[in-house]
Image 1 (cartoon, rainbow, N blue to C red):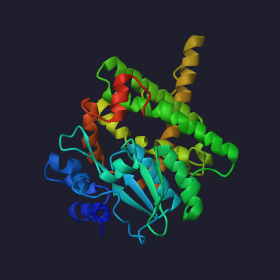
Image 2: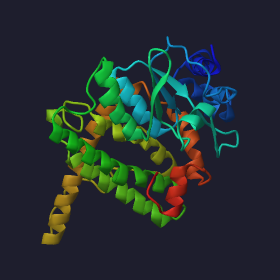
Image 3: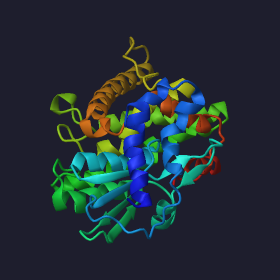
Length: 335
């Protein structure tokens, strides 16, 4: 085995042997906090002697995902590969440094992606020669559908066949990236209480809008109804992380979305109607969230709550150096 294959083997076997869970489920059972936080991820940090030029065994899967178990953006590509039924290597290419602020990245990731970010999807021919390198999370999801699923995926579509429906999916994926994901991070990173409250309200309103765009739950639980799609993938990682906001910021996405009270003035009646509609939307969101997080392709990518609580402490303490956090501090759009 070359060094990269050893790195992949360390990830595939290490957590199973040491933690009895390939998705870090055993981390919460470690004897002290410093052990469970990132022990499995750091296994890969010790393989940095690898070089990107190392020959690749042509017997390995044609697709290699450069991943980080704690990263929701990387999780999008991971879910897409699981959903499409594509054979792939899952390689942990980025870990949190020992200072618990910065990141350690493998040489392969730094060579393959000029931004040094996950996810990065590599594809190889039958001789082990690299055919392509794709990054940016939702571009990876589209690539999985357009190139990998159509070339031999064993499971379902990620985008609908109908071109209008595909366009609608892209509209709502854009909404997720602009309206749902940013307030998640603002709520964690911002130190001003008023700004945190604004982020809470923005996220609640965006969740209502997102849910109101779904068909009735009787037509199917997902964004498109019965069919799971890239829209579901785009927000699934943050839906799973709602408990992080509950833990650090006491976020209740149902607050203010109750049923209607007895109407008084016309203005009060309108407000009550809006509250009722918001409550119905949140109920629909809960159906979506439950079904999405129970989807087998999503379940395969979920890390333990305790492990994620540990990784997001850096955000809650406003010490992380991630590009996302730096963008929030500077008031810029997320990278």
